[in-house]
Length: 173
Image 1 (tube, rainbow, N blue to C red):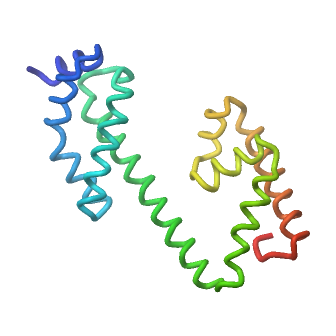
Image 2 (cartoon, rainbow, N blue to C red; image 1 turned 90 degrees about the horizontal axis):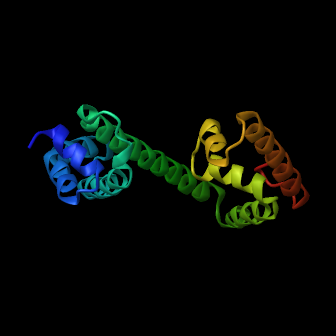
């Protein structure tokens, strides 16, 4: 069966066709994931996550001939997200070791202050700084203009700085 036929069947809910599509692409996807993530276990995990994401959104494929491109884009986006997380974790670990034990409690104070923000402001700050979403993506998620997101973000950061300074002039403010 041709690729385009398989895509059409998968879009209509045929799990067997979707499985066949993934079998056709798994070696190529694995190699791409491995080239990005540099680790076999992470590459396999990427394949599992991409298979899940593709299965959930297969109906969004507009042109069956671009299925391979669509699937590869999902994989690359996933790999880039994972690399960002790794980088953020490495930076966080480095900062914690540099700060020493006395300042490790400062992270808890920051989390505590974030928890006191109003829900929209807290949500915007978490989406931006914890989950690495761009302003445009946050605006789409919250269904509001980008300018509103920027306003909430600035308001939240000012409030965070003020509360952290009140708590003792932490180096974050």
